[in-house]
Image (tube, rainbow, N blue to C red; front, side):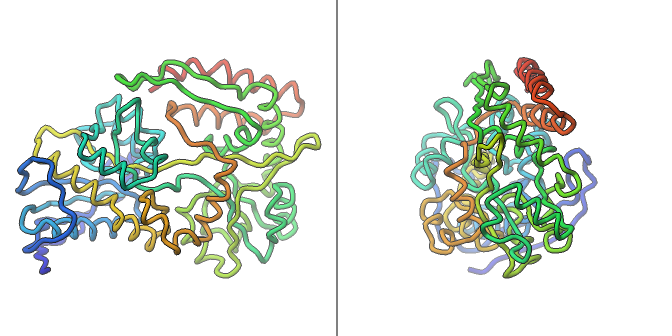
Length: 429
């Protein structure tokens, strides 16, 4: 196939800092002269020229640009796409879209717990039966559930790896040492290194102590409006007190850092709790000394409790379009970007875990050290569900307050404050 890439411009975008944008890649006049591949017919004649904006993580901007070109190639002379790709973290995608849906991306990656907020804002289009059947056939059942509100699916599964595990420096911490929070801290302290664990500053990680102790939280959602209507949460009960006592151990700022910066491994840090998105950096930093394992355990009043975590997915959403032809092209492009081919390419490039059933069964994926550690942690993990975005902030505030507590009574008071603040979160999103 001969590509006709007419103009390639790299243009800085001076956009709102609150959106975390630093630049845009603009590719004008993307087209091709011949076609082959998995072309979907949804009954809409959509040949033409389209301006399409995509938001993806900075790590895959270049790869995504290449994949869009391949999509155009596969469809022959049918499409010309004026493409803009902007780096946007999946964790911030919903907040950025909600600032101005009209100016937001046509196709964008986001973490599954943001789906409800995006639906309420009218920022994601429901999949019709054609795409629902294809998505369901090609991806794991759990990943499709992650894209579902009520009985409707609103996004394309992108990755199955939105969880976290332990990275460690084997020259400092042995495989046996890596099983205990207390031992990891002691080994780091002895070598004047840090244990980088965001549990005191990020509710996504703070939850690991509570989930490990058997606490549960879930939120009821109105399928039509996407609004949260009720919650079911026992973080303030007896098991929550155990979790709070465990969290108090990592309040030792002399050894535990709340950042999750993998580039500090080897030099300043000997252990890190983070996700697969940091694997390539960690591998480059530690080389053969890189260890990957399920999360460690903590001990409270003589009881050993394995840290829990969230298992989550990243999804690719398509914004509703006024132009039905552009909507058709965006759906087809999103389906391609989440295909077996593209998911395998992302794994090979940045180690992201596939949701595609065929790609996820490949030997290289199954044996990948980071994904294998994540799979082991799955036994102790909770599938991430829809919740108000401010719940994570609320839990992080609770974890921060635990740092300065000294008695069980003080800890319980903090947990009671946490409970009393939950009703306010129903109206936040």
